Length: 157
Image 1 (cartoon, one colour):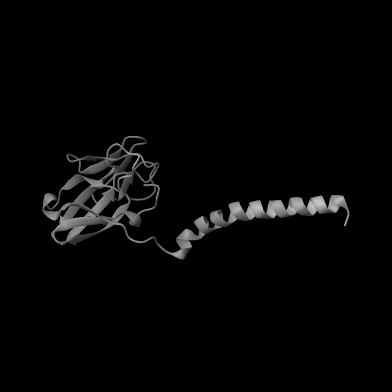
Image 2: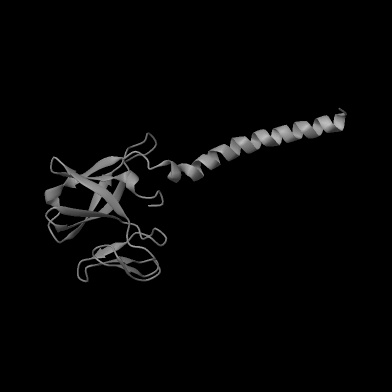
């Protein structure tokens, strides 16, 4: 084997190693939805009694605090109880470009100020560029406390 062939083989080997270092994590990330959903991450929202039947209320969910943040992180959600045994928790973000939506009690609609998206009280798309309804969190009631699963939505929200 001459020197030129040896150098070509070394360069090919280095390229293969670098491709593996970059490619394997990228492949695992791309296949993560196929491998299954993440573990549920249930967090308390508020006592269920804080949400009257038929009304939409905004709630703030405390998130895990990290050592770098001066104050704890929070996530805003909208909670609607259409019936005594049913609770719907919406993401506060529009499904178009993740702008924060605003609830208007007068018209009983959610509005996205960024692009004019309009959503019905049940989260369905009414008008504007969003093509899908508002994201809904999985939720449950434990010991009278409403909890949501933060892992039940795509990470864009």
